[in-house]
Image (tube, rainbow, N blue to C red; front, top):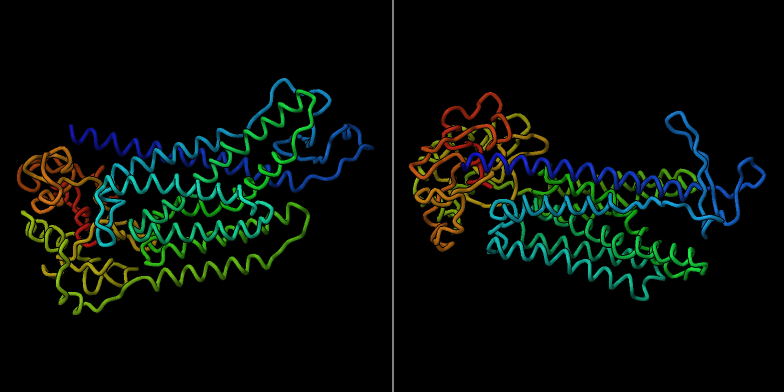
Length: 474
């Protein structure tokens, strides 16, 4: 039954991730199209056949799919309102809802693995989830208050304050969560602002304008100004959100101690790139200097990613006393058996001199060539996948007590501290008996096929996935 639910869980995560990507494509695509369309409109030309009508502020001819399209923009209602209007809103709502579902599936229900980093803060999974949820709501309230202040008439200053808010949120997240969760939460925080702008202001204000026009009244100009300001922010935040959405696949971005600064550089890159295209669509020419700025910002991010990696001398690392968390897990029942499996399946990367091409030092300094360095236990933190090398994937499920056979210490009646002392890191296939007695299955738990030619083999299958034990080092 445990195998069935874990397989179902993984497929649910894949389905929600797929939905999230599809809806994000729809939202971003429609947003970019209308930005380009609005900026590229030409003054109406009444002399042309089928030319402009009363109230038309701009028009454009476009060609796509073998057909020609004549598009007009009315600042007031046309002479006759259409029977049906298409509202572009559900793309935004569906993207946020699917992203929130993915946040719950991966980071909230898997808080012990993906969210909590005890080397930064001693948080229970429940406390970490509460902080995660509260930060999204509080961040939106702060942003909304800034937009409603007198700063709304000074958009440049307001954008700088928004950047400062994002900088503060990134730093704060990095004091509490794993590096992976830091960038993901910055993305969720930004996406919450963008979707809330659509839900609370852009669409409602547009509906007010439509209702006033249908009633023959002149809509107040403030509704247009408010919607335009929020739309401007969404325009410049879109590209950074895409980066942050996929950042969990690239440890060079999230594993650095400067990950929050890397994220801020990405926000600046988003501004420079969008400025280029916005100016181009508005027939303002090609501002090639913005790409130079973008390249410089990207180079700074690359430099920060490497400078944020600790390269401690191997002898000093092995001589250093283990942390309390490391000592606790090293003393756990079954550790020696686990150590043997790790040495057999992880030593090609986690060694004093890694033999895997592209790996210069052991990920997170975790060296398993000797038993002593295996004390370097760290929950959360960085992944052992350097760059795009997708090996050694983290353990998807943790069984804290082999005696109970439960998938987590929660619900066992065992205090968290006691569960941590007697618990053992094992794969989801392991049962309540000795390590490896369970009906382990290699595929679903690993996600990858193994470490190159040195696959997990029978020993890996017995514990669900041997590479999951790499969490001893990360």
